[in-house]
Image (cartoon, rainbow, N blue to C red; front, side, top):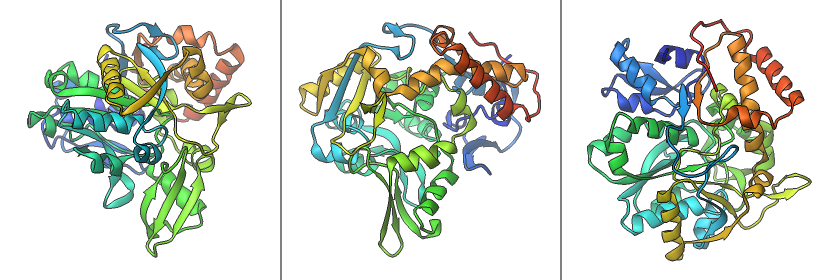
Amino acid sequence: MALTLETIVGSDLCHGCGACAASLEAGRLRMELDGSGNRRPVRTAPLRDDEQRVVATVCSGATLEHESRTAPYHPLWGPLVAVRTGYATDDALRYAGSSGGVISALALHLVTSGQASFVLHVAADETDPFGNAARPSRDRDDVMAAAGSRYSPSSPLASIATYLDAGDRFAVVAKPCDIAALRRMAKRDPRVDRQVTHMIAFMCAGLPSRQASVEVVRAMGADPGAVRRFAYRGQGWPGFARAILADGSEKRMDYATSWGTILNRHLQFRCKICPDGTGEFADVVCADAWYGKDGYPDFAERDGRSLVLSRTAKGEALLGAALGAGDIGLEDLDVGEIEKMQPYQATRKRQVLARLAALAALRRPIPRYRGLHLVEVARGAGLEALARNFVGMLRRAGKAPRVKDVEAVR
């Protein structure tokens, strides 16, 4: 049985991408911040059965599935055409970006080469220093202004129907869950495949609520109401969280503290049962190519370096064109090195099945996952880790009301 919008939102399976709002008649759903500081769809009236079916079709919070194989599938890292590290050859883009600036360089290459009229991605909301807004970048200035991570809620697909209706050809840069939802939108709207030239993702460790940003500012010793601009990273690698206050002064906090002790403690629930922090449904996905220290990433400031995975022939062709144009530098990487750079992503995929099993035991609704090799990768987690995750999820979720419509996972 497909989950309804009410069950998806009420059971915290929503991740706030906005695909449902974009796929229904304008005005039927709007995306708003809820009391927890996460973006959620709000109905203007009860949905009809046909509208519920549309929601179920496009929602990647409720369903993730690989229906076909476009590249060899690695159980941990998904479809892989090629594995590399890289960086933007434009030093300013590399410095402004959160890692090596490869996504920014690809965005700029797409618009300057004429492959896309613009790139739709998330940037800081000009009216809210902690907020985000999806906007088109059409030139270098736009790309530079939007460079860097935004660790706060966003709904990048909520406005995409406007660009599809206009007949534009454009690329999309977004979180893994957003890209997965965009692939699902293509199942019912052929314009997505015709008009979206490329889908580019960045690896994601989870999306913090808006309140998390406020907590970072307070930990900096500043008044959140006095913040005029807020950056989570960038201007170096990994860069600092930076708050520009009304008096022009700046507060800073290093990445290990801002992300490692505050932001990652405020993740929305759906992120805790996500098997796809690595952007398996994208054409190209990038991440921090961390240097290791004692088996864990070393967050010392360095020149930025991106992990770059091509997942489709289209993505590989884009990387080849950008390399040929001199916009990026690339170096081949053995697939076995990915886990050293992104150990959390490997761990979370191995352990997610135990968390889902706990929710199923509580008769809580869970997403339907297909083709992500969760059983295979769970074998590599170890019984102790699986048991710890199972019990931990029972404790966290056990107080919630029981719901009957539980989806199967394999």
